[in-house]
Structures are given as C-alpha cells and as structure tokens.
Image 1 (cartoon, rainbow, N blue to C red):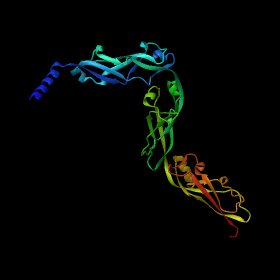
Image 2 (cartoon, rainbow, N blue to C red):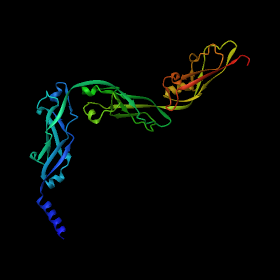
Image 3 (cartoon, one colour):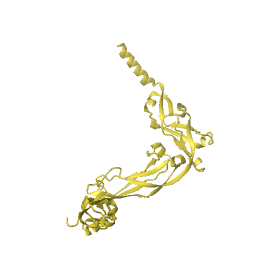
Image 4 (cartoon, one colour):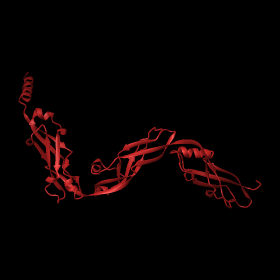
Length: 318
C-alpha cells in the first residue's frame, strides 16, 4: 500500500507541478550563411573532419521537453560573423534556434563551426555509362550506351576536384525489350577506385544527365566462313577449310541485320588472315572474330571472341 501511494504521489508531482529539466541533442546539419562572402574571392568552405559533434542542451518544463525533437532545431553559421578568415581552420559562431523555446534556454557546445577555406576549381569530365550488371530480355543485347550531355563540368574545392578519376552514370535495362532513356545522378570515383562519400560529394556542384541504352536484336544462327592465301608446299594441296565454332550468336541494329541477311547470314574471314604459304601439314590460326564483324554488329555477351580457322593440307594423290 505504501509503494502504491508513493507512485501515485510521484505521478501527481510530475504531472501537476511539471518540473523543469534538461535534455541534449546532437545536431549534424548546420546551414552555412553568406557563402557569397568568400565566393567572390574564388574560395569554398569545407567542414573540418575533426569537428567535435555539435551538442545542443535545452532547459524547459518536462511537458515541453517531451514534445521537442532534433528536427525542431535550426542551426546556422554565418561566415560574416567569423572571427577571422585568415586562420586555418576558420572559426564561425553557431546559432541554434527552436520555435518552442526562448534563446536563453538553449546552450550549444562547441560554440564555433570549424571550417577550411579552399580555392574553388572547375573541371570537365567525360561521363562513362554502365548498365550496372542489369541485362535486357534474352532476345536483345545492349548495342550502345550514351549520355546527354557526354561531358559535364564539376565545380568544387580544388583538393576534391583533383581526386576525381572517373564520372559514372548507370542505367537499368533489366528485362527491357526496347530502347531505354533515364535521368540519373552521376557517381564520382576517386583515383583509388572508390566512390566519393556523401559528405565529399555534397561540396561538388554536379548536374544530372540523361542516359540512353540502344537495344539490338539477337541472331543465333550466324555462320562463319574463312578463306586463305598462299599455296602449300610442292606436292601438297588444300583439302578443306573449317572453323571452330562454325556458328555464332550476334546482336545488331536493324540495318546491319538486314545487310547480314543479304550475305546469307554469314561472317567472312578474309584470306589475308590465314596464310598457308609453303605449309606441308595442317595449319591452324587463332583469330578474334570481333575484328571481322561489319559495323552495327557485335557478339552477344556470353560469346567467346576466339575463332580457330583450320586448313587441312594433304599430299597430292593421297
């Protein structure tokens, strides 16, 4: 009975008297004001990586404390209020406000935002387009990938701009049966092959691009025919010319596939690649079939580029 009475009394004190208490929050987003103040000098700000987490401690009655969350705070740092722009790092006072509290009940630790000033730089980069391991319907292959624009200008702190190695944009073609165009954000890859972190990327002025994947139809019964040059050794003759494989799968534009159809769906390997001069035994040459594909045609992604041309040479009268 005493315990129950004690709990009831405590609840009455808390809910009726509404005592004053404190509560702390960690603020991760500080808005930088008046960046134009340094932009005119060709400078940009980067937050110090060793910046102590910004902690806000508030004082209010309990019912008010229970209603306040981290999203209720607005933290700003005004560059015009910086102690000096000639120091490294530059210390800029932090001001935190909350529409549910008076400024006197808000305490900020530390009081300053630590920033580094860097020269601003702009460079132009070619956009590399990938399908990010997605594949269209099995009846199609990606014939070409393009970006609009093909090159983009990126502005940011010089130290970050100098770290950029590649600019990639990906497009999703999973199960596609027709050309695909998507608006996408680019990913910045540094010289170590790693993607820029969200923090570093936030300092860069990067525009979106439109990426297009052109799909080509797949044809699976394309024949290979080879020729040869030269003559075998005296007393020998060519019996036959064969290729391994003798049939391949290719993908191509509509125009290229029509031209291939007019050639009896056959890829020809010119004789200059297979010279049997003075040979007295079977001769075999390993070639890259991609070198002999007409414009607008390509091997399917699961095909090998290697093709072996074998010329069987026998003694005359054998």
